[in-house]
Length: 456
Image (cartoon, rainbow, N blue to C red; front, side):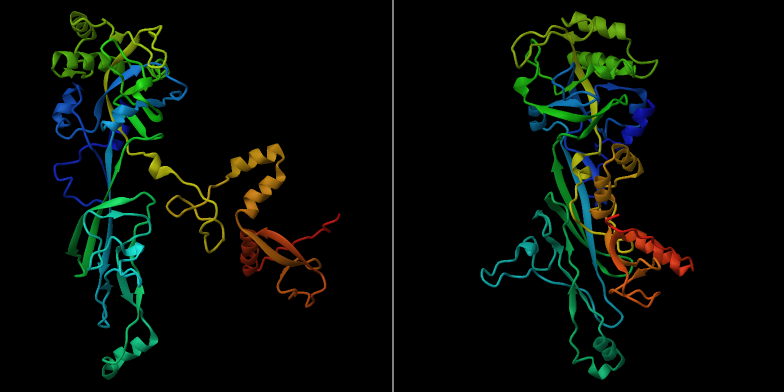
């Protein structure tokens, strides 16, 4: 129950009846949300059925391939094609056009044309004549959404404002400060809103939409804290089917039940199966829902197995499976953690100005951190050159000249302390180390480097 309270907040679904009108910084919506077949008193109290956050999927509890270990799920490709778990991701981009005190203002320019073909260049392909992306445009990576140019403050312009007589003759330079689309996956501009902000500046807001279908690594969860990622998308013809030809939407590994003791999920499957057959919603309220024995008897009266198990046939071999399979509908939620938003790799990229080390974090295109514990593992292996490469060569290697007499850092073949250039050696140290030495020197602490001969 506690786990579900945490995950219910991450589930996608309907957020309100005005969701198509809103422009939020980020919004996740499920394309085809459904009412749960098994509800509780709480669900009725909070009107969850009017704004649902999930869909009922047919689940088979069995082991299939090796891609379902550690809570991973096997999804049916045909179900995904039909729209199971499909979602919309809305983001927004905005830009302002301001007026400045020196009578200059930001300009929105139309698209630049190619001199040969007289068509807009690739970067400006999705702009209209006003320099703003048009609604319905498919925006690809590095394309401009708002073509904004800002006046550059130069010395001549500043002088012209103090002498109004020259104001008519001055020419203002403009700098390109366009708002571009940075995501590698294309989006569609759903709405473009032109308005004003508090400072009476023009405000342009663009609502961007992406439609995503579930893929490997996307996270799902039932209402019992049973979360898992998609480990395999299998073709429908390879999945097992029952005597009616029904194929599950999702296969869940049975090892998720015993240690966690989520008996509620087993009860939900029985009640959901009964709800589908009887055409009425069942209750799963704690201590007050439908009794398991009643549900089982009703299932048996409709010609189904008393325990909710079905005889399944393998889609690969065509033979009947050796065991009966627990098979029926369960309400599953798609969570907002998607592999597309987490995926990150880097070879070379931006570095921090102060330490010259790679930046941190996916949004800043950062490096992958080799921490203290990883360092300890490499020391235990004795992989000293690998350690050297990871911690210095690939990070912030810096060449310095060190005087072997006084141990201080020199430059351009000259030691300022000894006033000579006879005993300088070139060594490589991390830039952060050199920075530490200089900061210590600024506090009147003199660190000295003792050098040994390279051949010793």
